Length: 358
Ligand code: SF4
Ligand code: SF4
Image (tube, rainbow, N blue to C red; front, side, top):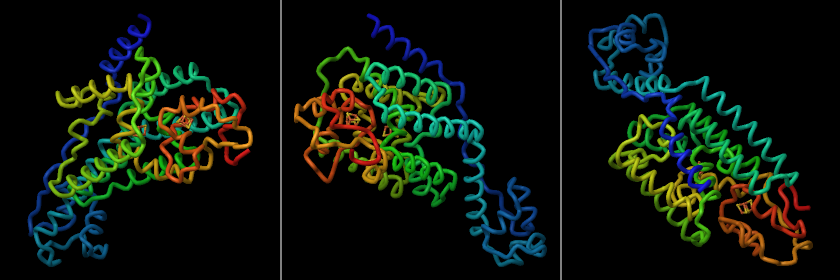
């Protein structure tokens, strides 16, 4: 009964969570007249003249500001394309709440550093972790919203480049920061900070379903790679942001939900009750790129074979199969979300979280 109440409360919180919804608007259409000067062209399109000159590929002299497109031998099409790119970038920039984004990144780093310390000291029991997961999705998702997210940095970058051949530099910076977090301490960002990841794992932990479903890593990763390739091809070929149609992160931005996304999210959250992090392990683009980066992580779960009595406890509790791969010495290992389940069950302390094998 208590678990049911918790689930109902979570659903209600998600529905009312719209505090930080920032609407992404469509970029306006460029306005171009061949007899306009570059200065006027920039003014009419609400752009910075210097940025437009740079985009047009001409030298930034005072004469260039007052020259017309005709006198510069720039065709309407060239000017249209340059202005369109700048308008898309400026619309992206205006759709972001930069103060909130900075706050979110500062909090993510704080949580990651705290998580490393707690994992190193083996303070994380499964009960405590469930509370921390709840705190993470409430703060990073319900209070601070769906954007930015680790998944969004990969998905939106591919979708924007596929459709417009435009790179939005702040997104690359965000992706680099998320990847750095993975390199520092395994998938700390996914395991402890991602709004959707923590929600899925929290549901998994409080689920009344006792018999959980597990699939071999080769299968889940195969599905994840196939979906990533399909998403990228569609983003370039059609172009269409396939994930955008049912983006589950929109659960934290209800004003952007559609019937399709509501249905998809409902199914995803129900699956989370008996399958560990379905979105992360089967579909998330950052789940895939982060998994690659995990192979060079500094802090991670380490195994001391000399202390191991081969009881199988860690293999049994690990939700991803990472400990099985670790103990079997496999080169390719499943994702590790630094959940600490294996650390807390090992009776001989053969597993620890750290930089070096003990
Ligand atoms: S893998 Fe999961 S936790 Fe990581 S970014 Fe994707 S949804 Fe979030
Ligand atoms: S149980 Fe698995 S996923 Fe969790 S910390 Fe251990 S190895 Fe990583």
